[in-house]
Image (cartoon, rainbow, N blue to C red; front, side, top):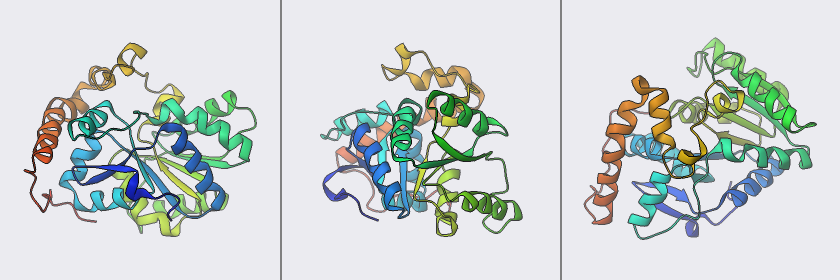
Length: 267
């Protein structure tokens, strides 16, 4: 589906076309795509996403087939400036889910939450409905199931989603699990929009506290996450950030290989 002229609205960073749209434009596009009920994928780009995509050919291809890949991190915004371009703003799903919920409420569009530990998606749904009475979240289910395409558990999850046929399916498994699952299962799913959101359900439900605003507003949310989960995230940030900017500088000076490397992962 093509609901915008993407050729004029993105900047290529390490082989991934990142949208130059602002948050209000993306929310409006989600609403438009949901109303058309033509399968459309929206995803996000942060440093971890672009590092992973640089090493993973199928993931780069997936991102570049999405209708929008929006800027989800200050590192990506800074990389755009280094490359001599600009993105109007960085925005992460927990910051604008309320704006999207208000739009869904006005348009009578339905949502399904899929992801997080058991009970987290349900709590996130309850929180959002409490904030927006009348919002229709038709289902919620955790992300800890066998995601192999032909597994019994995966077939059951597809049936749960299809039974409700939501206008917007929000998937939060983390990168690249959510992208792999969408790549393999969108053809079998009945939904209008597929929106990848990473750990958003954890934040909305209160499962995971967000960094204070003085950090999130100044580009240091990654540091708060590192303090909260050092064992899981130290490699992503302490190694991933410098590697990312080295790669961006190589791109700026035309030193990236014509054929980007692969880490051996395949579709």
